Length: 114
Ligand code: 5GP
Image 1 (tube, protein in one colour):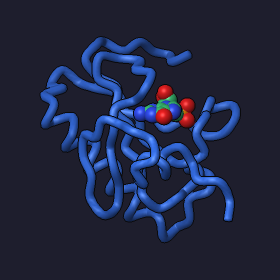
Image 2 (cartoon, helix red, strand yellow):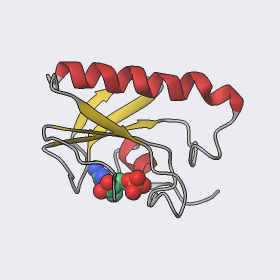
Image 3 (cartoon, protein in one colour):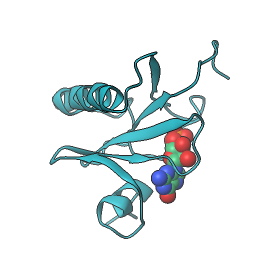
């Protein structure tokens, strides 16, 4: 079996993380290197390595990540707005090969992103 991803180790309790939400489909935890006052990662429990590698039947899981992200943003009162980011592949600067949605909030974002 291949090596667990960092996020699987967090789900399995092998690496500590500050959880923001968890259900049977996904977990959300605070990023270890925050890029905004609020920076949370929403991660499926199923190992989908990236958006490029998601299967058609993963659509419900991926959709659920956005429902959860919206709810977290509401709960944390990011009422002025927030940004959801999915980095994909080398050029997308994805560093952890386990699909995740970044929730970034609490400051005004800039565009274009770096
Ligand atoms: P990516 O670059 O793949 O889009 O995002 C990976 C994110 O995971 C980065 O923002 C990085 O700071 C975060 N990260 C990496 N290792 C850990 C960890 O052990 N714990 C937590 N909470 N976040 C991590």
